[in-house]
Image (cartoon, rainbow, N blue to C red; front, side, top):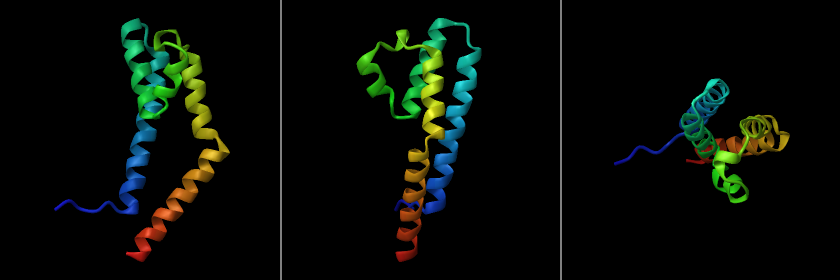
Length: 99
């Protein structure tokens, strides 16, 4: 039987994803190979679950690297995102306490 995820497990997963995104951003800035850069853009956006929305408006190969970096940085620095994450973590903690 599968083990139920705890609040701590979710926090660890979030941290791992955040770390992967930051690593991808650094790699994207230093990559010269265009095909590799395209795959990295795709993976970075997929990590953020925004790839589908972005590519509806512009093909990924035309999407500027700087814009991806700005989107990701804005996502991490947005007060709304921080508030949402705090509420989600609080809700998750409440669920853990009630079990």
